[in-house]
Image (cartoon, rainbow, N blue to C red; front, side, top):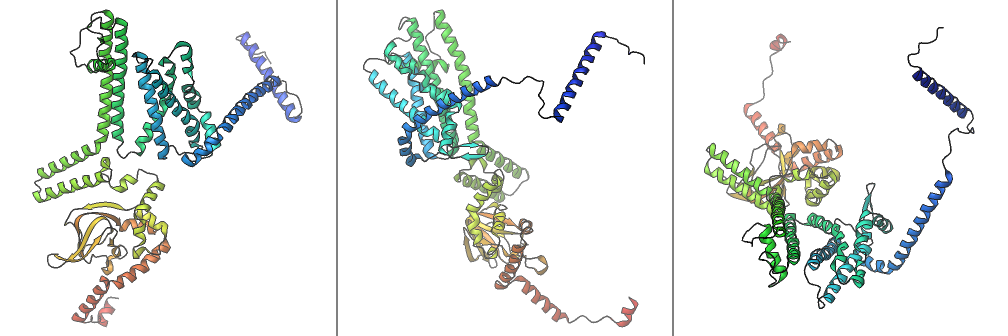
Length: 573
């Protein structure tokens, strides 16, 4: 055959070389498959260097392990003594003792944060004050050290979805964390020993400020356990504001000292308490109150302009943060007020009678007050089922069981039923508030729900004007359960009495549809309920018996139906 046409000789040679190498590699792979002991043409990795590196790593690991073993041996008596106080391990999210300890660590951190900067700028290191500062510094360092040796190594942690409660593993997890290596260890380095060489200066304690992580952890934990977390958020924001003013006061004193105390009208005059005078200047300067002495030198003008710009930025940020905190705290009240105003406007537009309007206002006000007493001011407009829907099923079940399972177990109709069926029923309950005098059910109405009294009381009434009170049912009582299992064909689902609220009544409601949806999965319980329903109907004088009796009386009154004539039957087929 004729030779192929070569357009580019260089490309053709490269392609032929690649094809040749691929064929050689294919042959080597075939030989390797045929003989598994055949040597590979690829170069072997440098085994000796890797082994040496592993050996070096293992030596380092062994030294670290030996060091921590010695430390643990020294701390063993202290750890055993603390086991009876704080436990073998600590749940950092729910253990109140750990949160109380974090408050002490936060106090030590705030001491360092405020006083290190103040002592660095103001002349507070007088010979008489040095022993006091040393004592307070040692006390704060002792708190830091106790936190790193006793509390942090006991914190439980989550690994692959499991909560690790083993002391050895929790201690290892803390010592391998970035918090221990970068923050806690550096914060405990004793740079204070430099006092011996350079004198008593607070700058050598600046590393203590790295403990800020403890402050933020305390803030998060405190918010999680407070019923009204916005109170702490407001306090924290005010603390940020005061600290910014504190820093500005320190800088103002340094600037005054640089210019010369009392040399100009703008700098600190040297009279009175230096810190209070400088803090007063910081307040007026950063908040832009005005009335300050005019700066004259370039340095003073630059400092004052920086103060003004910083004040505008910082205070606008803090005001925005405060607005968000207060807005979140009053979101429920604002939503309540908006809904109530819209409802009132709707009623006025449609000329609803004043009596009805007043009852609607009363319902809104009571609902808000009741939810506020329950500590749910942000969610007054949500019923309890809506709140529970946001939780996992396990938590919803636990809450529902704790609140209402004991009441359900006392209901005669549900005795002997599957416990899981009762739990499923608890999750279908809905909360409804009735005003004083409201009728919950009326005689003759179709019964589609049963009721459990959560709070308040209801009365079973009768008579021409419902003035006769037969019985008063209080919290924990149940009514309307019989109508859930009776069908309309025998009249058993009709209400047999009037029930109205006596005062404000909060009721749990279970609808018939929800009950039937649940019974599909529990056939044995369905049989039990059917049998119990028939017994309870007989015991309470069922409406079906009355209907049957009246039907028989009607037949007797009009006589039996005459038979059809034979001729007509034959004609009709």
